[in-house]
Length: 490
Ligand SMILES: NC(=O)c1ccc[n+]([C@@H]2O[C@H](COP(=O)([O-])OP(=O)(O)OC[C@H]3O[C@@H](n4cnc5c(N)ncnc54)[C@H](O)[C@@H]3O)[C@@H](O)[C@H]2O)c1
Ligand SMILES: C[N+](C)(C)CC=O
Image (tube, rainbow, N blue to C red; front, side, top):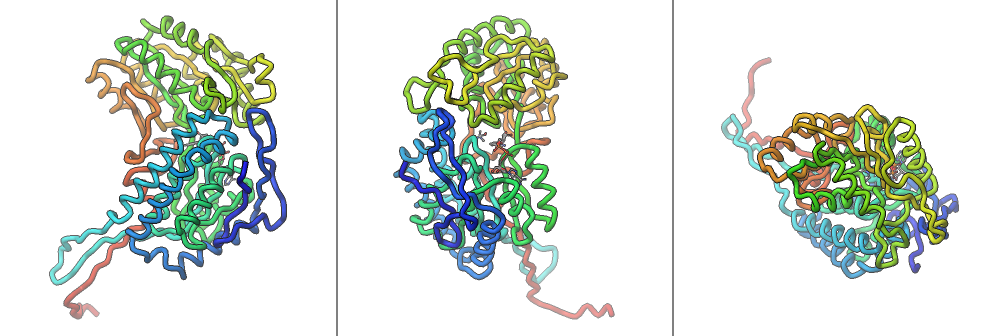
């Protein structure tokens, strides 16, 4: 690996002020692939000061949006140029297959391109004011200094959803990637420098959540915090951010229902139900881990899933025939194991999986077998809690109303799916499903043009699409009286 992970503060590549480092581990074999600086509060304060100075004294916010858009477009081109290197880094760091990482890199370049194109199409509007001799206009301005905190499962993809709109709209920023998967974010900051992002505009601090993340959340010099990660952390950030009433965007977890009606195309629904969960070993916020299957096809459907799951090829993300890689860390593996054990104790039936694989080749990695639980009911923790691993729970339903009711019985509201050939039924269901994204005869599809985010405890705000730009702008009303006159009241 050629990359030397460093922090990027005020246009300089630097180690941690403390000199501390953290080992970055390959989850496939536990080898140390890099040593990253372990920044802390001091590094974070320096990065915030640089971003503050660049916003308050620099030219970035006043740079014409077409010019900012051109730089964002250049970043997309550089990502496309270095696609293979980025994909391999992402797979080394996360364990996901290189094929998946290549797809991520294409999505990421697409996000930068999308925001490059709409950077200069966020103009204001003239209001028809209800008073004569006046001009009343609404303009959109950058929010200021943005803190951006990302998780380990889609490190660069989640970063791109924040970086591209923030830069396109003239903000300055400090990004903190997950401390265990910083590599592609470091690389993309190199590309941002090459693309011409001015010093101080985009800063990168590497380190832990309770130090770097907490400092970003509680700083009085940060105007907005955009966070993607777990619900527990999200709540802590929301509390810390109240110190100066920061603008807040939270993309949190999900426990996503996937409803299968008996009239769905059976083979397609089976195939997509598997894809909906087991990509990246289920470590996807929108994974369709909660299957809700019509009773009349339940047994046949589960049998078909189990038969397919037994043939999954687990292994290195760098081998072409690998379908599923390892989990991210020993700690996360232990969490998934505990979740499955708790499910068994609660009375769910293990249809397949439920342990680590025995294959000697896989013993050094954090592998867990794809797992399916049947006989599940909504009162079980295993149905309510996010496993964030390769585990499906299956519930049964008899009527459309029951299926919808089950799907909404959750503190989460990120995403959900419905499989049926009855168009009216599909539309009735998705209208009632309380989630930010709902797919009909599809699962887990996302693209830059459509907004992404959660209802209920899955978050606040939206990324992607035009709403993704709105997160990074303040709206100002300017009223200009062309014929001022005294009121003669006092
Ligand atoms: N809604 C979405 O689009 C989306 C996308 C990806 C992941 N997720 C969610 O992310 C979670 C998995 O990611 P994770 O384990 O990295 O989440 P996490 O909450 O543990 O960590 C996310 C980030 O927050 C930082 N952090 C931790 N404690 C912090 C604190 N006190 N203050 C500030 N920052 C802190 C971490 O260092 C990391 O960078 C899952 O719940 C998943 O559903 C959601
Ligand atoms: C938002 N998404 C689906 C790309 C990743 C969630 O973990």
